[in-house]
Length: 323
Image 1 (tube, rainbow, N blue to C red):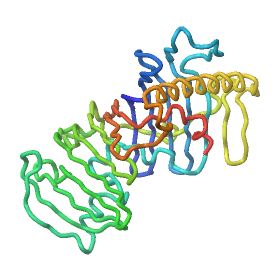
Image 2 (cartoon, rainbow, N blue to C red):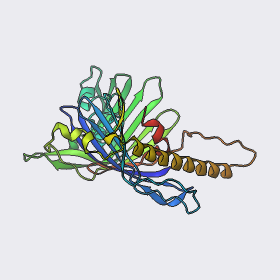
Image 3 (tube, helix red, strand yellow):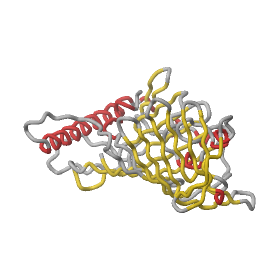
Image 4 (cartoon, one colour):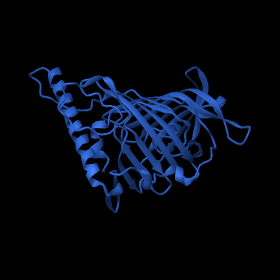
């Protein structure tokens, strides 16, 4: 998979630790088709106690004309709902991490890091031509260096977090901030609108570009905004809970039909991609499937429509959703 773009609408209630993400994706498999695959939706919710992850089928899969007769599934149909205690919205490269809410790596707020016992001002330095104050601190297992912009409420214009002894690094730069109104007041707050992030995981580097399209602060929210109502789903959705698995409307047969379609289509796409790789390698070399350290993945994030390019996960979805 390449050139994946994810548009996300989100709501966050920091007071009650609640998050709601609506993802819509477009991507390419160039070995299969020059046209975009599109709209494999993922709705992620966490109401402070329980998580909800709802997967839907793609809206468009442009398989070539010579593809075998595969079972067809309806586009944009809810498919699997996973409910559990673990917050599945974490680690989604959320836009608010660029504002230090919290900071990636130690998962602490910028305020907590600045107030650490060993936090200190290091120097003045320019970031993208902007005069900033650089601070250093230790947070959990991470060494933190951040350059704070005094003209944007001391938000981090650059941020580096290195996990001690593990070689795990976050690096991010914010190139643009804007002010947004706070509902019910005359106040306006600063928030990052453009930036970039590099995540070095040791065996792979992930790069993302940030584009914040819109932001509303202190909008009314209720707990139900951070849940998915099972009764609202169509028949045939598999519902996975810690206590067992069920199917909406009692229609396990509909789910099995959909599951077969996803299985066969996924198997076909894997085989086409594998054959393409084999042709690209000299005959004397064995076929190796690996994730190169420098195989960088471009990305973009946007909020209340967040735009994101991430590493490809489509072919692994069927197996990862149950874990």
